[in-house]
Length: 56
Image (cartoon, rainbow, N blue to C red):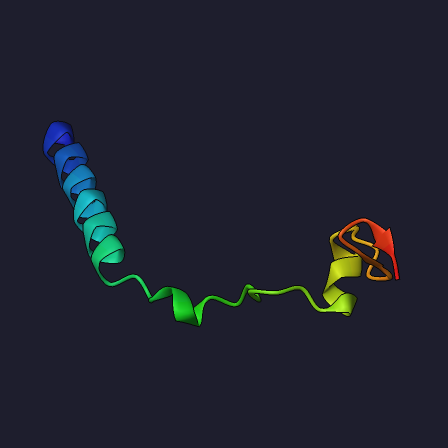
């Protein structure tokens, strides 16, 4: 009986992950910005006063 429970849980998890992968939201709904604003660049340790390593 315990083995049947483990098989049921395993199948449920497999079905859940397959459905999750199929119904995943498109990348346009991701909250990551494509370009860093000067404000968010500071959060990532990037100095916004420099452009490509050169002082502006």
